[in-house]
Length: 421
Image 1 (cartoon, rainbow, N blue to C red):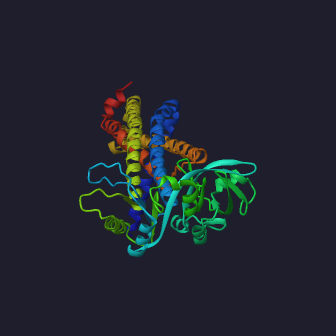
Image 2: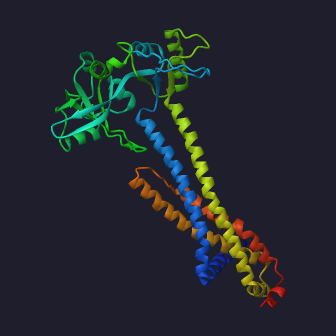
Image 3: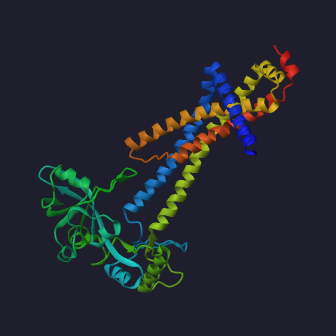
């Protein structure tokens, strides 16, 4: 028996709010042009804030994709002075193939290393030519960066030992040189030297406008002998190297282990500048998330100004509406309406006005995000959580800025209100 009154009470509550929404829609329709102009402020504010949040999320997603495209669980070792001690040095450090072999032997969790020599090489075929960023490395590079050959094969240890004139092309480079034809087995002249194409890499796509498929991979021994050997101080010196770790390994501890090993090998004493720098993909991710988080916060803060302006506009229009409808308010009170009923009526009207404006702003933000994703190759994700959050925030905005006019309307004296002309 106790559930019946509760059910009726709930039905009455829903019915009263339904009536308030119907009255709000009628009032907005009566002053359609004024309602549209008022919604513009909220519309622009929600559009700007939603797009700012989506752009920030897209920036984080792009950075993560960019880092993962080079391998998500590795350390990067660069032969340059580490100036963490505050002192500056312009002497280049050292990193050799022997150092990488020591890292593979002595650092726990390391599954592969990839020495690298990089250069921009000119490639020519019978009907096309291009200039691409080439990497001289070992088979471990494909394993660490998760970038194997899609067609043909990857470079092998035999290719490295014999300094073979072979290379693996990225998808973009292959299409530029050979079009729709399969390049595997074909010959490319690299800086005037004939090379055989032994494979084509899996497609990686682009990040921040950088085409990750405009590349070529060749044996490090070949790169050293024919293209960059004269620029290096020693016969097995490297420009940089990757060290890949097994799943679950601590990159923080891995960085410490590599740093300590390199210090021992080069007899770097405490307080001296390290002749190398070790960074991990975890550090890059954390730094990028911090930077993009600040960017997103700044964008949202700037966009929120338009929301504030829109909210002030809502308050202003609702005060005008209360003044215009003073006699209507008095008549409703004379017929038995409570002050809370009048307050709720105007609160609902402000909330409906903001939600409608927010919905239109959300649709426009989604269209703008889709255009950026399609034409600028920049992800602008507007998920269901962001969409519902935008609509909920619009409703809260209406309730906050509509509260003062609503309270003012609820406190009007019925007699004084009925006397108003």
